Length: 253
Image 1 (cartoon, helix red, strand yellow):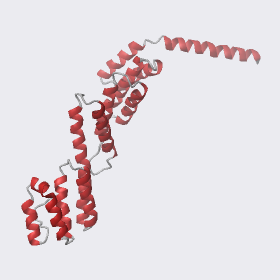
Image 2 (image 1 turned 180 degrees about the vertical axis):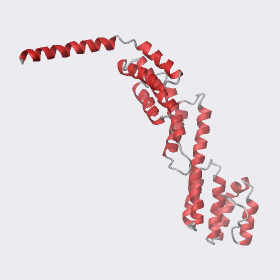
Image 3 (image 1 turned 60 degrees about the horizontal axis):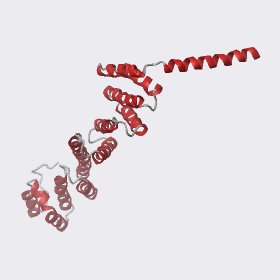
Image 4 (image 1 turned 90 degrees about the horizontal axis):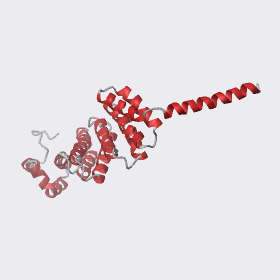
């Protein structure tokens, strides 16, 4: 029994030494290049194998951290944006001074933009995309991606605005005018730069008229007239007040 224990211990030591020697003998530069070649040929799973070898074996080296970025790229191009985000984020946390950090951060932005669903669905990813895009603009004000990032923020904010605006329209159809007013106020206050801002002003006036609150409607109209004139609807509102009702001849939805 004692002899077996000695032999077992010796086997473990021998295997461990052999394994370490095997790991040391891997050419990580070659593995990295093989991974990049596989990535360029769209062989993403094969590329992942090569990059994972480098990430594990050359951990906390410049090459290992570079491999992390490209590992994220494989997931990005495979369409698995959440796994891509995880790898990019791991690079950012592990190697904040890596030359790939700026690219990784913008890839995270792009991933969340792609994950952003249709306006009527849950907008968690849209909100996250806006947050990440704004952080990127703040940290890299001279980036050649700045204009693209700002454009994406505008698109996403418009999407969020439309969801809230449509909620207000639904409340109008349900004749829940007080709730509709709250929704339109949210559009005006939070999404003042969206294309639904002016329409929200119009619908706010409509809600007051539906509630027979003509003084409130007139006051709001006088305060927000510049927005209404911007969409050439001031004549319509004037007629609303004359007839004391909201006309149905023009669809504002």
